[in-house]
Image (cartoon, rainbow, N blue to C red; front, side, top):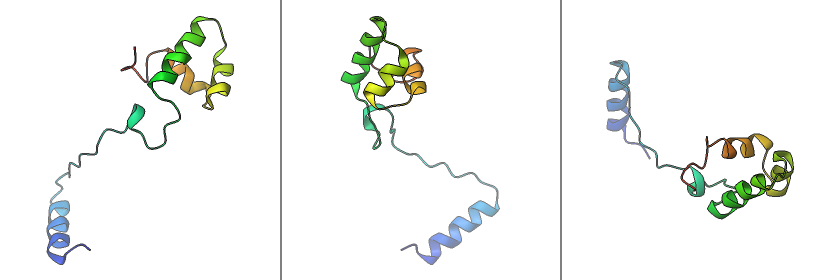
Length: 82
């Protein structure tokens, strides 16, 4: 339950135009609650691509979308996995 004092304080800050900076924990990669891939699977995805398996087929096998595989192979996501 939010106290009345906190609500008043928050309204006062927001009316002054101050931006609230809220820090959220990082939820990328294996830390994501909705992840379908993990570090081991990413290495497998990259190995499959090196062997010439099409991205669409890799996506089907890993139960993700083709753009997800494309982003992994282009180095836009899962960059922490070598």
